[in-house]
Length: 224
Ligand SMILES: CC(C)(COP(=O)(O)OP(=O)(O)OC[C@H]1O[C@@H](n2cnc3c(N)ncnc32)[C@H](O)[C@@H]1OP(=O)(O)O)[C@@H](O)C(=O)NCCC(=O)NCCS
Image 1 (tube, rainbow, N blue to C red):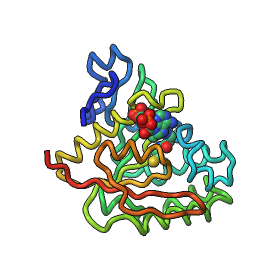
Image 2: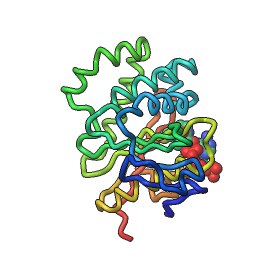
Image 3: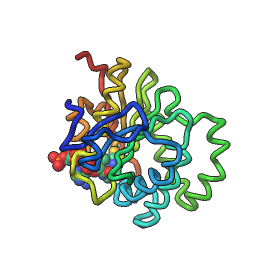
């Protein structure tokens, strides 16, 4: 899979400014720097406001879905020491985010669960039981073998469909391939299954979680 999508320049390995081509196009892909955590969480909240799982957890309330995702992704994903976060930026503004963590650190440890419990309760409120129900099914499906666990991946709604998600995925999977590691992700959106299949992921299981069809997808080690 080419690592250059629709004019999006890719520099996945560092947080340096995008290369001249990226500056020219205005959009580049690179690792997130710590000061960009707030902006990245905001993008995830906006991207997932209409997501089936997020809406289900939020009882159908779109702005609540956005708030829950924005808060939860900080505590459970992007803010973790184990997270590898790739961002897309347009003229200095974060417009896309891809998170990943390597097994066995892709699930929160007991220590992290205890430490983050107050923040999760504050962020989720009455949605907490639904969030726990969903995440526990996801955790049960998580393969008990080496892999990079990708997700969430989100692009600002105004920028979707322009190759940015593909560029982030391509950049990250390049690192995965260099490490000769499999990769894994969950998705609840039919349209996304095709996107991930383009990158070599295959559906290995699915589960109905509170009425939402969740797919679990695996990508074998790529031997180019
Ligand atoms: C899924 C997502 C990250 C893809 O990034 P993107 O930059 O929009 O996608 P690209 O332009 O690189 O690739 C386009 C493909 O992505 C998929 N896609 C999913 N949702 C899409 C959307 N809202 N707009 C455009 N493409 C979307 C389709 O497979 C599409 O191919 P198609 O046009 O042939 O149907 C992004 O659309 C997004 O943030 N969606 C909302 C949040 C979400 O569903 N995240 C993933 C959860 S598993």
